[in-house]
Structures are given as C-alpha cells and as structure tokens.
Amino acid sequence: MGLILSARCEGCGYEERELRLGTTHSAIDEHDVEVCYLFPATCCGRVQSVALLLGMPLPTPPCVSCGEPLVLEREKQYRIARLSGDVLKGHPCPACSAETLSFCKEGQFR
View (cartoon, rainbow, N blue to C red):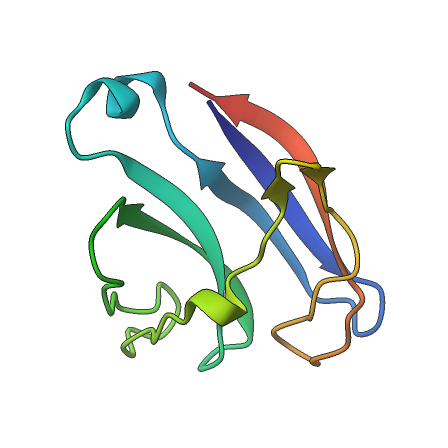
C-alpha cells in the first residue's frame, strides 16, 4: 500500500502535491517490486516521486520539470515511512534548504 502526500515548506512557501510513496499490492505480487521513493530534484528545487526497482542500482531518470538527469543519492532520499512511525516534519526543503519541509497524507493507493 502506498501514500499520496503533499509537501509544504514553512520557510519559503514551496508546495508540491500528488507525491507517491510506496507501492501497490500488484507490484508486491511481481518478482521485481517497484516502489516509489521521494528525492529532491536540485535542478528545479522540487520534491519528486521516483519509481525504483528493489535490489537494483539507483537509476538516473529525467527530472519531470526540466528533463535534466536526476542524480539520486540514498543519503538525500526523504525518509518518511519508518518502522518507528511516519516522520512528516523537519525535512530539508529542496527550494530553500531549510529543514522546514513538512509532508501531509492526502490519500492512499493500492
């Protein structure tokens, strides 16, 4: 099951909607599970949802805004869903770099 999130920075007012985090039940049934993770796109200063295949190296997909190669780094991935619970506040904003980016659950996908 996945989450549909919105993001908002209290510092600069940056906003993003319809971000997908997680996977679907049908993807879990497949041998190669595709999971959506959130990464900053430094080229455009936005959060982007990127589909990754578990167990495979990180790809370099195009930025959905400008088409530039999106360099993914595990260290910069937004870690929201954790075993200890969801961490929705205090993330670095891709637009202003302040740690005032918050995520809000808007829905789910299966």
